[in-house]
Amino acid sequence: PGVGKSTAIGLIAEASEGNTLVLDVDRTVERTLAKGEVVKDTSKVLVAKVDNIETFSSWTKLLKEEITPEFIKANKITTIAVDNVSELERCILSNLGAQGKNKGVPAMSDYQYMQFQLVNSMRYMKAWGVNIVWTAWEVVRDIVHPDGTKYSQLIPKISEKIVDNICGLCDVVGKILVNKEGKHGILLEATQNIYAKNQIDSRKACAVEDFVK
Image 1: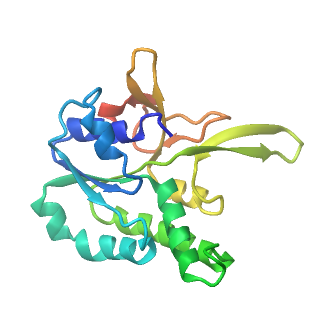
Image 2 (image 1 turned 90 degrees about the vertical axis):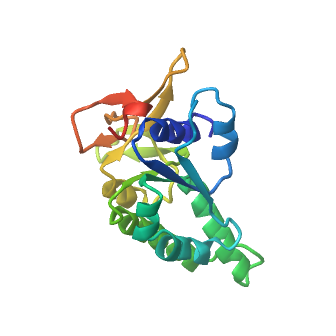
């Protein structure tokens, strides 16, 4: 949290020819961009607030009924960003838990519902023909090789059972970094300690505003 996800979306929007639609889950993007500290022009940012109470059903309705090809074309949208999928997971599970009989605690089946919904959402959104950007918090996972070698790796904070599936569906996985001068960049090359990849071009890193160029 707080390392530049919402700012990155604003920089991408600022540098894009068309508009960027932000599916706002954690309610931070508008406050962050309103500061005007890094992103100066927010005229191409459109925000749709994701229902974070009745999330399970409303998320599907949003994707399949409200964001239609006609809507995308009419609003000149070239990028759709989900900010952020880590919180989206929590909202879906909280919603499903509240509907259950375990005093608000999600059941094991609820985790499966959430996991299938997110993976299917990525597949569905990729068919829209625009840039799809998902932001997430990060978490550390420990990896142990058969020879006993251990190391820690930073990965997107997504359910462990689907994080590799979702990242596999993405053309690019990157880690946002901010240097001492306040310049926002994205690391696109994997290391032993950082989960990243770039299947589009040969860049190992780039400025955030150049990400979708």
